[in-house]
Amino acid sequence: MPITLTGDGIQYPSGQVTKQTKPTVKWRYASTPGTEVTLSTSDTFMPGCEINMGVPEKSTNWYRVEYYSVMDDWPGGGNGGAGASIYRHTPSAGWQRVLGQGLHAQYENNAGDFYTTCTGVFYVPVHPQYPTQEHSFRLYGMRHPDVGIRWSSSIGADNRAGGWNNTLFEVCEVDNSTAQTWNMTTY
Amino acid sequence: MPASLTSTGVTYGDGSQQRHIEGIVKIGITSSDAVNFSSGSGFGPQWQYVGNTEISMGVPAKANNWYRVRWQTICDDQGGGAQGTGAAVYRWTPSSGWNRMADMGHHATLENDTSDLYWMCKGDYIIPVHPTFPSEEHRFRIYHANWNGPTRINCSIGRDQRRNGWNNNILEIFEMDTSVMNTISAATPAGNLTRY
Image (cartoon, rainbow over all chains, first blue to last red; front, side, top):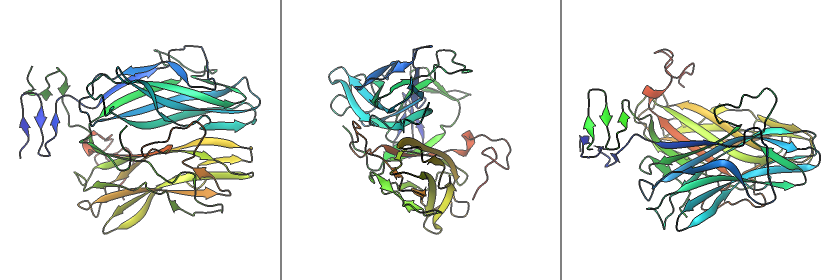
């Protein structure tokens, strides 16, 4: 089958139809300029890190979710760490904690003052029961056990500008005809 | 508004315009099921396959395409002393077999007896289509080597939410069309990287 221009897109020999420029990517920055986010022992929302991706193009698509932040034990001393969690929302499902790195994916045991970068890439499926609803995503974090942790750290000589505050949250809708998962299933 | 073909590209129904080929040809994703995997405690290269990180990307669309490989996991030193770990990408075609392509080294992440420590090990690699066997299926794997300690990767951690095949690690491979890669010169169409 040759490539054809259809009424609303391009149809390729594989059967894939492209209806818009791809991929759909949206970014958010933590909206806490000059303010450290101290995590608690339960999931804490990173202010500003919520993205509405709208209704997915296909029920079988995936969302590629990525975050990046700068973490500091605060005010120091003791042992402590933190990790991120990803939440998904549809109007019928509400907010659900879908994946989590654990409460000390980055951790040090009283090693003195400690700064590090923390990051994660996650693939989250379209909600199998509500594929025609808007999908939103959020970034949360939690800490363990003794020392406070701040993300989105303000640091001497940093250059936080244009809304960027040492944290990036990015979500990309990926067409499942392009992406193949080998062992991950939907939920 | 129907999609239309113009002199500069394609205009879609939503008004967006595409003026160039889409760079991402194919995406392969997997997550290792080898939770708390350790590649040993000795010195030196001891590359061990990280279970279930094999991805078949099929036959590349072009002989001069590139694969962008991302690997990320969460590590934990187990016990005292200096310990480190690092990741390597292996490529396979039926004729070449498995070859170690790009490698951080066995202590790309390391701590020197700092007491208990958890950290993130992350790598981004740009791997070429095999120049001799571009018409063959291409597969990829992640291997790890440890330095002087039983560092574990793909950690289980309290309050983690590992599910549906995801286990605190991700291997993501994009086949990238060569036309969208950085072409500093025709001879080295990916910046300063060469093919092997």
